[in-house]
Image (cartoon, rainbow over all chains, first blue to last red; front, side, top):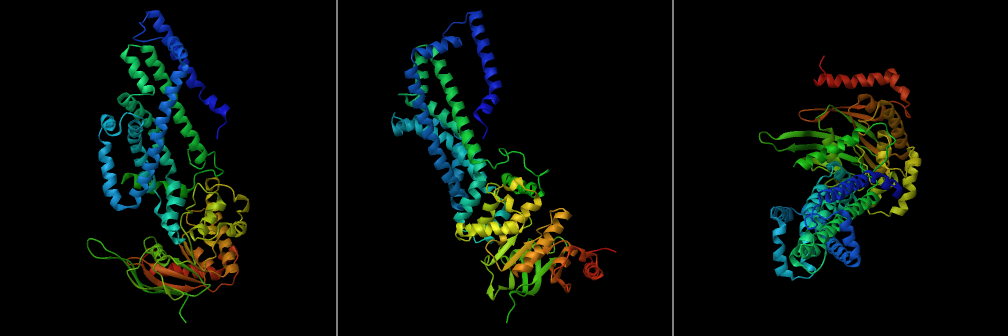
Length: 280
Length: 257
């Protein structure tokens, strides 16, 4: 894992870019005297946050909790369903086809339904977050579990490996990079789902803050909530990246320089069945 | 008394749109315990298919196939396979990669750790036990995969062109190491290769296969003293064996001219 210092160095350019944009924004708003309810200056947004930091942080925490609950549910159900789909022809034909069809429906449009079914507490928000996040996780996990070198399975069979050992010692670790790719998309989707849920079900969270502030043309508060959402999204994504680095130090995208001068033929070959599977 | 490994009139047929396709036709071969037998043949002669059948990984269409008298219908427990590619798992260290065969066989991992290190030492990989496969060269990776096959001490070792992807120097080295291991352990080895000289160097008998359909064209016993040094390949006796086998291929029409 890269040290904290190295990480900070990596993000220096990103922070610099942000600062330049904020300065231009601040200068532009002051120079052209833009009215506050259209576009508040960054300094005004910061002041707005400082006026009630406790309340805003509580709402951020609320959104974080809902997002995490939806995301964790999506991971558990998505990975579980993917394993079922890969191991059962029946589930592949039924559940997988159903999920792909369901994925075509704009899931945001389902949000009001969940309020009818689950009331206005945190349940409908978690359900929507889960529903939106589960698709990329499910689809990437199915792909990852399926893209296994058939010779690898022969090696396991020649060693008397049981089905469950093949799953947990070969297929699953082999799929982890794909699963993480799905989870990285999924965590951002879960946040989107949570905000949609808060718009529709109300009660609490940053989405609800935005809704209420918009009702009274309190644009600075809308921007505070948006800024907090941005920060939350980045933190969640980065946290997942750090977990990935710890769990998959062996993956090609993470590892250091190998001792060998050139990749062996064997490694190149290994990519081919993967491609073939992906195309199927 | 029947042979250690019996292959009798074995057929492997793939159904196709038109005529059934014979991958293997009437293959008969008996292998005694402790024998080193190589199979040489051009691509597409079905030698890998034959190995997969013996390994219990492919069902046979008809014929007789038995290990120590028991018909082979699924992978036998006292068999180790070395594949063309090393098939090491990237997320496991070399030691853990070797130990996976104990895990798959439901054996106690702890009890085999010492043996795994011993086998790795034997193949010069002792210092690399805690490295990952991608940190090793192709030759070292294939050595590790041989260690994996040897870990549970199988009586039968099947090797499917294991050195085909290696450079000639590494290949020579591994040929010597394999011969030494075979002489020390007395395992029965069925070895598949493209290389006539590799087959002659290693084997007690060389099985020459023809293609379309795949079948046994000839079996050539190699009567050279053991242990054989690499220099034996420059001797007249060795060259005679190689040219005898090449002659068989020429008769089969596999060599032109």
